[in-house]
Length: 197
Image 1: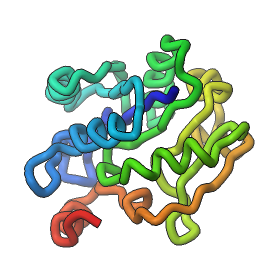
Image 2: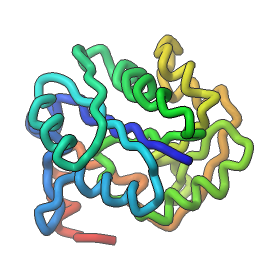
Image 3: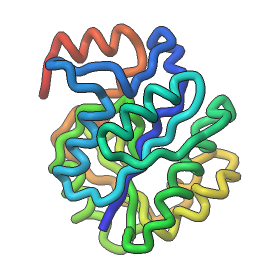
């Protein structure tokens, strides 16, 4: 069984200081709602949303409305590693889970079959990373054995360093969404212009 940690504690500075989680896709669905829908369709059993100031309260309300768990990061300015640590510390409580998706909220358009491909390809590796056009993307599927290192948050290169030091498989997928992070107004406009893949 797998879970997911959705990183949504950023200030969204490059996007104009807005909560990325609450940005909308065509049709009005928020990024957070789209990720929750996709994750559930892929069989994800537990979803933890990491939120914190300055947009934490509306994100917390949105997550609750979607039936998602919340992990609170009091000081997300410390960096992404602090949010990753909070998220996996919450996820680790569910002993039934053997892997978790590390899913930045600015990657809202991921096809559910990508998750299935990651699960099938991971085997006994510590993690599986989707690639498109030979470049790594999100979400990464991280086996439980790596969670303590992510929770400690003390690797000098953060989660990337933890994954680099682990047995990781790269999984070629046909979904450009794994590479498309929506973190600028231009990226958001381009996403709306192209519509769903």
